[in-house]
Length: 367
Image 1 (cartoon, rainbow, N blue to C red):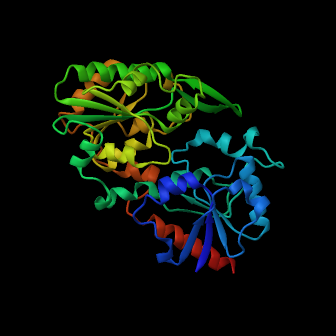
Image 2 (cartoon, rainbow, N blue to C red):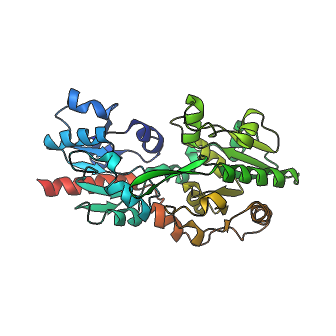
């Protein structure tokens, strides 16, 4: 049996251990977690390991670790944790000064195991070997016995099971994009507040609807630590976080817990989001979906091309109208699931098999 080492504790917990199909030993591969990859050059690793899996190859400390491991003869497989990269990310991926280390801007893995063909294509000319294998985060959706029942989810989050649910997985009040090889922060606070105002206006006019908003993990982290720009949880988002009502409730993020959004998605009737993976997950579940692209976000250059697949709104009134229609018709349900496969390949519970199969195939050729 092959023995591998995984180098990202957070992703291991959220995305891999949460999959009911994560059982690499069944496929002839043993994979352990290393608690602190940055320390490996100092501490060394057990010689029993045959390969390592990294989720990123850019941070300078990670480049140092991966160079050390390669010098020890271990192949490095990259299974990226970034799910929705676009063409605009290439500047940050392959020539970003912040990540320059010994004349390199990234560590070239021995093999890229990509979530989608789109991601694999971004690496053309930058990696010698690659394959598309999907991602384990979504496996739980096809193992219904691992999820709480709808009634239990309503009870857990203190929601009214007799009302329809609009779910908004929110976003940080800014977006960082690369312009001329430099990071530029674009303010999105007004967009976020306008979306909250539209939700507030809509739900206050209805007796049979409730809105639940989930704080973005990065926004929650900054809010908890008092870092960022101070607007991560502010305005109406903070209002309903501190004092939820029977019409609007804001749920905080729990570090290393990826189940909250999945449970809220299951009970939702309509999901609204700004370039979020949750829209793809909602489409997979045949939920009504609305893509949010308000004023401040409209000029961003590095966004997934969601507008061509999802019904997109650009202001409060359009959102309010779309919300009403989404709850009373099937107009906003995506029938063509090819958009899901474009970004996240297959939700079929076979990620672990494909991962192990590609690793074994590579290691066999290496002999």
